[in-house]
Image (tube, rainbow, N blue to C red; front, side, top):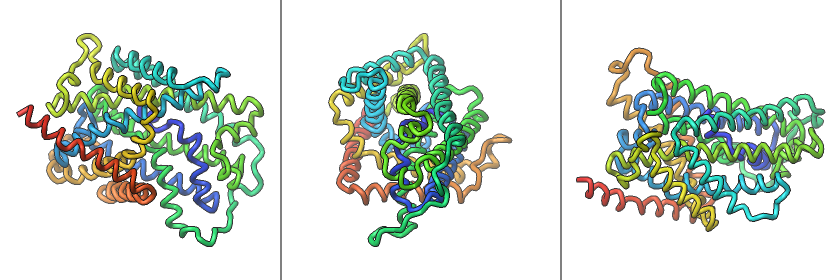
Length: 425
């Protein structure tokens, strides 16, 4: 549930039109979503071995700290708290509030108060421990997958757009090559597939993590790949290639064709549920990174405090909630998020690269029998690292100013790291 909830947000309801606008045929659109799923699965295989090897709170932070350098782990946590996760929570909370208000007939109301209320209420739920937060997440994930399942089933039964599968359009004279266009289409797809790493944050709180963490990563990612490919097939089958490429709200338009006037309300409710579940996971999982950093003496010591009764990192939850609320109220989080969004895939690629380090220093012969091994090593993790680098370069090429500012924002964490290191000495 954590893996599926970490991946499925609002992107699958919106992003497919960007892909259809970039590529020239329905088959290429579906191939791109399958290729993106294969890359996500490659990442999940690598994270599964890392998680089984180090079932510690903090996940990605631990692998970067031990596999590359403590500074690499710190910069990941620094960026996560400063803008990557807190900014994403503010953005998702605002999206949730906008759709929730639309659902109840108040689309003109300001979303900020409800966005703040959502962050605070979910932080309170997770304050009472991992079980209340995860149980709520389970319910929300079931509801969002069920909504997508209804969309897929209805799309399979509804009349198809004539020639939808073989549809294509002539490329414009100044259009990039098919290969470059395919690469460009993978950027929004890979952003939509990101999130499988959320389970690794919680590794220390999972029963039998050596067995259950790899299973959940692989199974959860596979389920999302299947759902995403079928949902895109429904969009193409209902709207056609040109119809999908021309609407920024393909889910609403497809649902309106299949369900009539109820279609818009159905999709609005689905996005409301999906974003609320994504927000719950944003509180549940990443706070374990700040806890792990503080426990190492690499960050504020108070973040390592566990509640005496609920065993939750309540100080970390509170600080992230306060900062996320501040970003939601100011509205400046969007600019910050654009600066650092490329950093997510820098850290994805760097984290999978640590697998090569650990294979060298911790050979398989010295591990327990039955320990999970990344499928297709070394080709599969190497392909993922190359794909991550391509995503980062694509973002830099598209918006070099924001990328450079994001790099500076991350670099600002370097003196902070050495200050904490000196203080802990």
